[in-house]
Amino acid sequence: MPQHFRLQEGDTQRSAQPLMPRKVIREVIVNAVMHRDYQVNQPILVVRYSNRLEIRNAGYSLKPSSMLGEMGSKLRNPIIASVLYDLSFAETKGSGIRTMQRLLQNAGLSAPVFVSSSQENQFIAIYLLHQLLDAEQLQWLRQFSSLGLSDDEAKALILARETGAVDNAGLRAVTGLDTLAASQVLRKLHHQRQLLVQGGSGAATYYQLRPMPDLPLFSDTNSGDLSANSGDLGANSGELPTTLVQAIEALTSKARKEKLWMVIVWLCAIQAHGSEQLGARLGRQVTPLKRHLYVLRDQLGLLQYTYPEVINHPQQAYIATDTGRAWLVEQGVAL
Image (cartoon, rainbow, N blue to C red):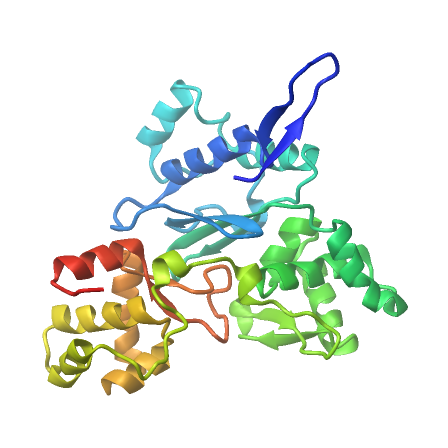
């Protein structure tokens, strides 16, 4: 974690402390252990990006997103929760998120953003490692000074810039707005101000920054460095190992799923692939292929999204996890 030093009055030596309070980090991990879905064979993932920390967990929130931080808990694993409470690892029931929000605010950091998906059976907690409106962000916002943006509109633009997209739940997390007010802010930035472009529909609606000549957009630098998990993402898509090409050519329409899975994870270990790109490479329809991708990502943990914070991202793709790469080696694949 990034460190900052503090020199207390009367001290002769400085002390280095994590930028994110230690108690917040502890509460993040405790919540993940307490609330995860243990029926899914997938580890808790803690991913350190250049500008944020993400904790990805199997198991959607049993409480509605709008009620996260309110008193009272809905426990998926009551026995584990009781042990953590008795050992004083966990906060009083239902107060953990509120405590984190308070500590982050005291440290000058933004409130966490929570993404809960019952369809994907996944919960993602996003913690920005800087104030949402720090000096750099305020400098970037000056290009819109003539528009007279409200604080909430500015935060929506910054969140889209930092994470690649903004949706209703994310904006509510950093502004405290209700669902209707957050929708009004996003629609205004989209329809009237024309600073955001809309993607998805219904509950999966998200917004991204509109490309402009003078508008620095979300880039791979902001999205974090996943090269350790993704292999050579810059490799030319046509430069596949001969053994992999032979494995693809050997696949039949009735090939065993284990052989198909090995090829899919192998491809994603070399380069990030979208579902349509995988379908084209393997000569398979996308809809049935997505069922295999769901198993490989959600149940086996061999793949992960390239844009986990925006599930319906227009450039969404899959890359192999460390677990997936280790699994390939066990299958005799030389990476």
